[in-house]
Length: 232
Image (cartoon, rainbow, N blue to C red; front, side, top):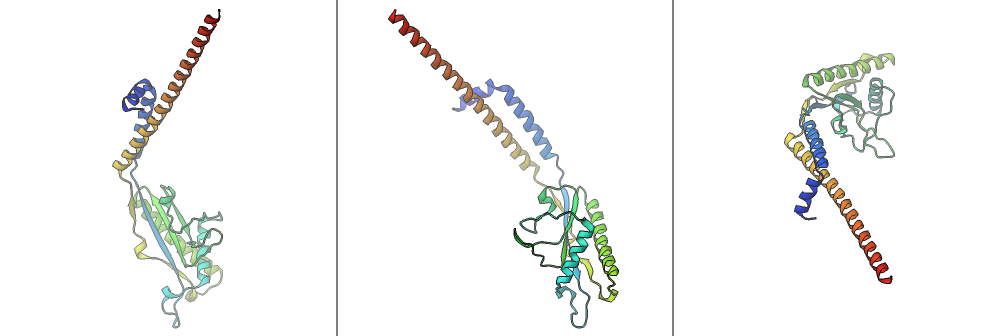
């Protein structure tokens, strides 16, 4: 199909072109009206109590502390099964969440087995405003500390031997996440024009096929009548 044939097809199927233009404009308006979101991934480190033998709490690693961190997370988020991703680096923004939070023990295992190797929790928060994210961040950090303290007190752990949880300072930063409106509008326009053009081409090919079939049928009928006339 040549360029001018395509133009004539657009004119012939102008209702389809009009519907495509309206849908593309609506999608473009929705794309540029997105104001973006604010996001933070806060790392909550669970630290063993210090002693003369182990004075550096950050270097002390313990499977018991990892288990404790998992229990605290489960007490906060509830008993529902946690979705397992291919990588612990997946964020709420990457999942398409626009407003919400998650708290989980990072799982570095593969498809068939889990592996919880670090005594930290990942706290993801996403929201429409920086203030909302800050408020939820502080509230959830405090809740983790409260749940950890309550769990150990219920188990009779002396205060001097209790595990503590702190937020890694460099991980509390809140970022603005938003795409380019110009790029979003451009991609929407390309997809809209492409989809409309594809529909017009399909309709034009079907029309041509019907026209060709009608011409062949008429030609066959004409030959049959001509042959019948000669025999008579």
